[in-house]
Length: 231
Image (cartoon, rainbow, N blue to C red; front, side, top):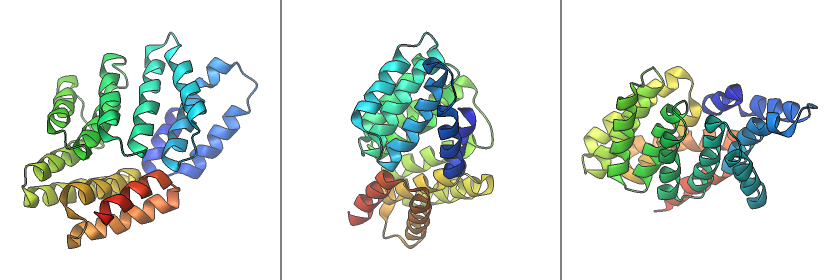
């Protein structure tokens, strides 16, 4: 479960989905496979291959477990589905709710909440996500560019284009160094929405994001990128 979750950020989706399929074929009880179903739902949500009834079933089963860390997976599936559909505020709200359910998963949910909130032009929730990370003492090479992306988005909302571009540029370099291609693609989406897809530097990021998303088959996020560039 953890390996396939991390593979989402590094873009090793073919490997992750093959592992998920292999695990799903094991002769074990359904509860032991729930985490596997959780991860598959997250991939399917952004690929546009998650039927509503399967999403609802996974959410219901995750909510019914006694393990609060697993329960937070229901919020992750809900948030990811909303994000994929461009319901930014709903996605941010669901990811923020993880904080009250699972201390373990809060550091992973808060950066997602901050990004989604920005796309919904909700600066207050984005700042709350940053404050939450600080309160938890979250640190590390991957979370530093997460923070930088949120700060860049806040600068964009405040009309400070230069600070926004500089912040996105620094975060992109860090994501690239770490091999976090999914985050690179989402950065391109965020910059297109919050800055301007016609900006020469942003346009390069958008083209890179589209190439990454196409390789990954993230059809729902490509649709959101198309909407942003059309505007």
